[in-house]
Amino acid sequence: MPPTATEAPLLPPARRSRPTTSLTFDGIRSRAARSLRQAAPALLAYTAVRVFALLVLGVWAHKEGHGIWPTLAADWDSKWYLGIADHGYARELGTEYDANNLAFFPLYPYLVKGFAVVTPGSRASVGLVLAVVCSFPAAWGVFAVGNRLYGRRVGTLLTFLWACLPVGLVEWMGYTESLFTAFAAWSLYAVLTGRWLWAGSLAALSGLTRPTGIALAAAVSLCGLLALRRHFSWRVLTGALIAPLGWLAYVGWVGLRLGRWDGYFAVQKLWHNELDGGVETLRRMREFLAYDSTPELFLVIVTATLLASVVLFALSVWDRQPLPLLIFTGVLLAIVLGSGGVYFSRARFLLPAFPLLLPLALVMARASRRFLVLGVTGAVLCGAYCGAYMVLVWPSAP
Image 1: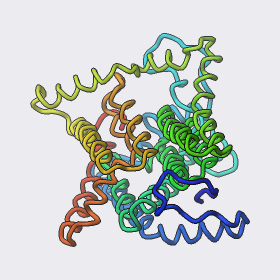
Image 2: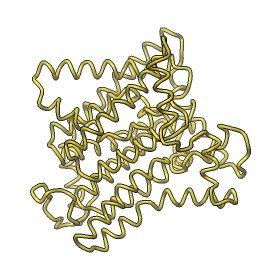
Image 3: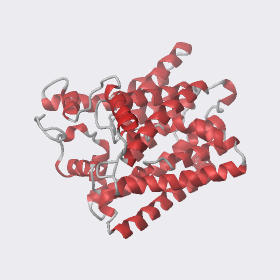
Image 4: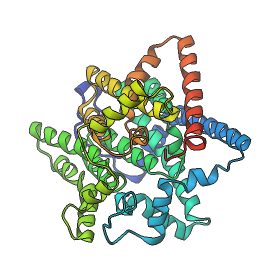
């Protein structure tokens, strides 16, 4: 359900919503129902894309003799989240690489643990269902941002494109991307509509979900401080101060648990996740593009995604997207490109950066019917094929 409040948004006056006049339960429910009806075509398109991709995966897996349930629910990073839900966090730093579960943020695994207590089935099935369920408020939030800025058609196309991303299958796997994107989309929408307490609270929750929650916190806090320069408001100040608390709380807790102030960053170092200014990223790109005569297809997809993201961010700046969106995608892109960690997961790390797709959604919204049909068909087929390839052929984590 979308947030409700009354502060002035960071948009031109002509685009501002009327102030909220009722905070009653019936009023909130009525507004949410209207918003959901408006988003219905986008949610139907999202569901259709995801179901088609799942069918392609199922047919391919059947021909190869593979089961898809373990891959979707309990493989790679999903194992780490389920391990945290089962046994909690490590108490020592250790020296072994890629082995300390303190690198994984707590909200998703503890939600899995909590829901598993009151629902049937294994924790793996609960985790998968949770990810799938969270993908729908995430898609709704993506639509809400696009609709707010450019209207219903662009909002629907933005949601569709987000579903068709080459690694979009992760949205229906036991990973945190769906939950994080839901927080990010509605927090950005809250900033755009001036609902600062909601924006800060959702940003704080995102900071308990993924390390890149700091990018959303930066967007909310910086835009809040800029808004305070024009007009002081306790709601704006509170939202700006709340936004980074989730991320800071977990990083601080890891430091206390390990008995050193840089405990979390020491854990990340054991996972090879250190900021190097993009040196490793450029090295890997040069290796695939210039020296590897037969590069692995999935690594080509990752490299193309990173390069396209840079171009789309430049177009977003050129289009003068609202500042909250530019800060969020810019910081997220800087973290992903500037990290020296694993290369093959970086397309997945950019999955929540849906505002980068706005330039494409605008082009498709203005395109002829023939071009639109070709674009939609190509996006659906490409997304379904890449997703199935990612989990059935690629031998490592998404």
